[in-house]
Length: 350
Image 1 (cartoon, rainbow, N blue to C red):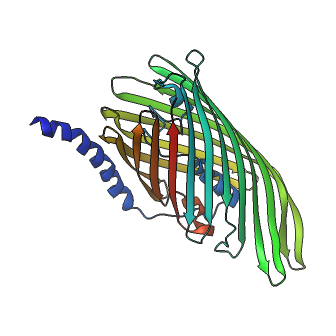
Image 2 (image 1 turned 135 degrees about the horizontal axis):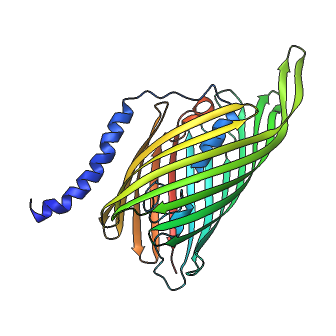
Image 3 (image 1 turned 90 degrees about the vertical axis):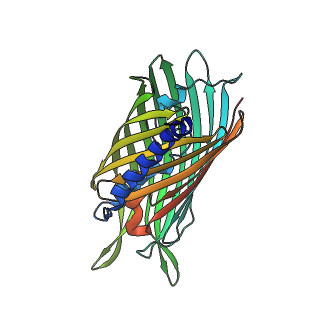
């Protein structure tokens, strides 16, 4: 085998890995989650609203980005004088019914050198008040505060993320005299995510996250009865538990292939929802300043999502990541149809 072919072989293996899985997944027919409570389905989708596709890929075994695993924030040392990286990201979720969800966030990563790496983040989610397939106007506002910490010891790294969110979800019914508020719910959620990374052998990395969250909620709704609409109170607690193991392999310098499995369990007084998600992808360094990435994911009901993206390093001090996600939120399909997501992430390093 010539030297040129040897250099090309790792690249073809990575691309072929994702392509083969995509072909297998596309053979399955997707099934929506319409029999489950909307609040449970929204909580499952919410987990992926603020995850971004950046360097290292959409994996819990990520060497570079802590978007999924808080331990990843400390795996690769920051080779800069102050060890500070401010970043901003924006995601736009476009749904078939016309609903558009805007997700923005601001974060700062600080490598303290001795005490580990700290990353506080603020995020905002806003919807454009569009009518669902059921004829109701959807209102969705969320504000999120999160702090992550991680530290590496040799071939191991551990991390923790604390997340607080305040959300309002409401539905209005258009009438000849104006909008009638059908339901209005306020919730405060508290989540803790533990993460670990381990390097069992050269080029291999294992990752694991475990999360528990609780969200007390209260609100009002209108129940339709034979005697007409009657207001009722809504009150309870929604909970969730997530387990996600994954593995990545660095088949070439700064190029990785990965595979993850995520189990999400959501429950409240209104029922339970189990969500199984399998993800495989490649993050490939095409040129020294240019990365290309692709991923495919499938849930246990046969819903398939795909991701493509690029990462551009303008210099060692600044980079931009762009990605597109096709049909990543099947839980919202009964009310809104399929979803497409575009993302942009900008980093500056000091």
